[in-house]
Length: 268
Image (tube, rainbow, N blue to C red; front, side, top):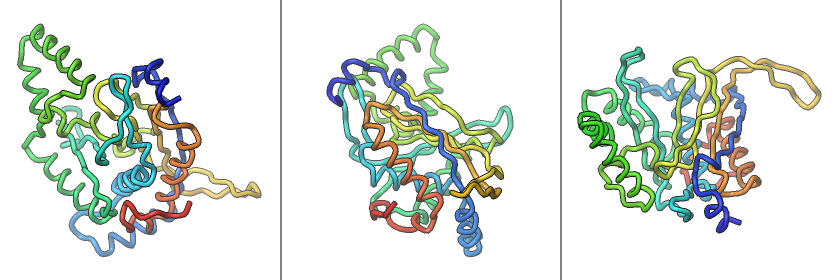
């Protein structure tokens, strides 16, 4: 099945599956309050927890680190997460790209520090390599840039795009995350792209108080977020995705597990 599907359905955008999951933030809110009582420089937050949880999930569920290119399936040698840093929350505010390469020994503390470094760098005047490359294309005559892009797309299909172009390209990471809650949007579907190798996209929605029901139908109102997860359905089967989402939910609702190394197994 996994051999024949890339031959039958070669384009990533034709093979998207969308999963929505609601996360109870009760434990995470309490954990963040405790962590931030000891942190004065750069506070721990929901997004850092989501990035760490996703990286640990992929570490423990390695099929999520696959991608398909040029009708072949590959397994990445490393795990990475990417996101956009908004330099200023305004209509004309510039953006930068952040790219995190995870190690098996990482946990919430080391990833918190790396996100701090990336966000600080992203909000400086310095541009990342991918943004600089896009600026070069923007300054070229239109006909010439279109010609070069067609060549680069051909190189992309064969895995030959120059490294300086993709060093900080989010669509060459294991997982792209977007914190829509920070701009007061609900989570929802976000497409994958045929460019690059990214097979997983996670949209984090706005934090809201929502109803939760126990087995007896009793309702309580709790802080929560909705996650919108888009995946390339060719890289694994539905059972594998189900266990993967269950693991991600377990990590976010039991945040003390994020203090363990990414490679340390957990029960869920």
